[in-house]
Image (cartoon, rainbow, N blue to C red; front, top):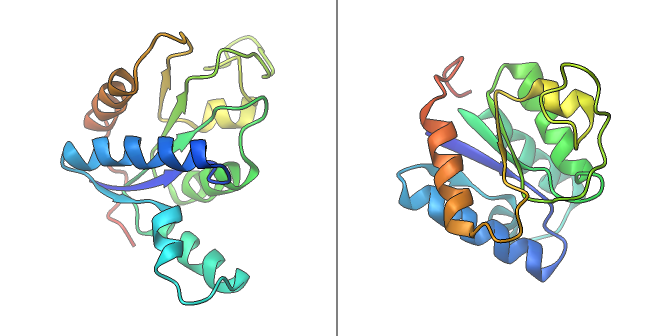
Length: 155
């Protein structure tokens, strides 16, 4: 499956986490579009070019895996989820953060994040226990992806 990996990529720790989880998804047979890797292939850090590359990446995906960690999930990741939702692309939300910061409304699918993100998700991998390993998270994401039937062929 063609996966767009959405997540914060501003710190060394975030980039390393993204690379390791994306590698696990690739090892499971998925084709992973990882924006931080794609940007490295661009000759210039032009804002319009980076924006276009990332939007094309979302449009070409069969599913989006979106990291929802942080007191408030990364705004770029949220934007990418919005594009995916509008295009009917399934979204797997991943949260390993044990902090609460959501709306917690009756019927909300994941109370620790924003209502709009929680309800847009096709699947949610919520593993906030600090003892959970990256391998366990990866396995859960792979299982969530296996349960998804792409709503449309990639653009």
